[in-house]
Length: 149
Image: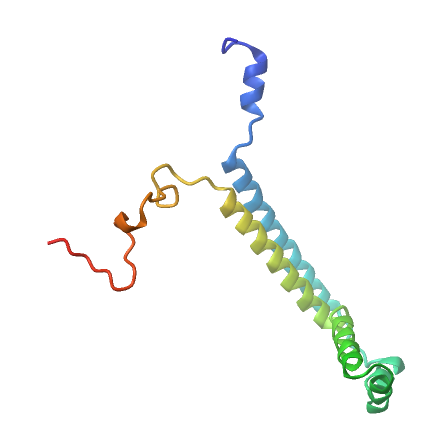
C-alpha cells in the first residue's frame, strides 16, 4: 500500500494521541472541579439547617440505642450510628461539604489519569531499566558508597 491510500491516512488520523488524552483529562478535571465547587457554593448558600425532626430525635436517644443493643448487640449500635452519620451527609450545609469533597476527588482522579496518559520521553529515567542493579549508577543501596576517585 502506498502512502496515498486514503485508508492508511485515516488509520493514522484516528490513532489515539496520548497528548490529546492528557488534554482531555486535564480539561475534565478542571471542569469537574469548577462545576462541583460552584454547586457546593450554591448548596451552602441556600441550605436550610432546620432542627432535626422527631424521628431523628428518637433515633438519637439513649433508650433507642439501648433497645438496638439488646436486639442486635454492640455491632448493631455501631451500624446504626454509621447509618445516621452517612444520612446526615446529604442534608443542609454538610451536603455542600460532601459535594465539594467529591468534586475535589473527581478532579484529582482526572489529573492523575492525565499524568498516567502522558508518554515518557525517550531516554528518561522512567524508560531506563537497569539490567543489573549492582551496576546501576543512580542506585546506592544501604552501606554502598561511591568508590570512584
